[in-house]
Length: 170
Image (tube, rainbow, N blue to C red; front, side):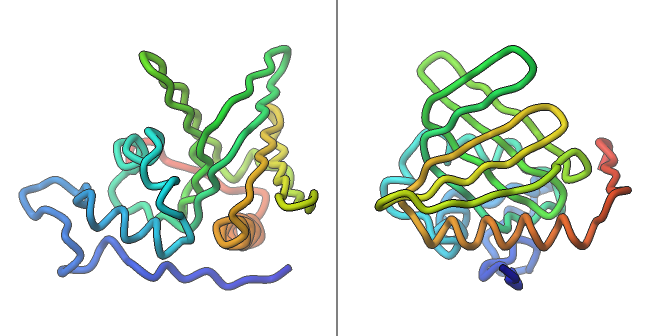
């Protein structure tokens, strides 16, 4: 499965709706347009994880793929499950689960990702991201976001290689 991922909305151009008052965050309308171009449907645009995602994005980060669905997150001796979002940027994976009065998010660097698997089950698909910290499995019905997400992660895993590093101060 080889895909070349090119975001259709680039958040670093001069006419992208990004406020120029020192804040690098895009406006909600621009961010929703970006998510639609990545395959998100109307339901996905209204879940709480969508509105929390821009808060986690750092300056210069480009959103390359998103995956919405039900997840099972297993790390060490904990097992979490629910509905959430897994986003692929040019620097890291972002896992977000928002509930009333509760937000859980993790950032997963590509250097700790061991692999990504995908299987079709009836009408949906299951994507499993294996890391050195645990495993995240997402069940989704949106094949547009699925293909873009898998392509983005595979492309970044192959391009960054084993020695991928991330500077948290950037």
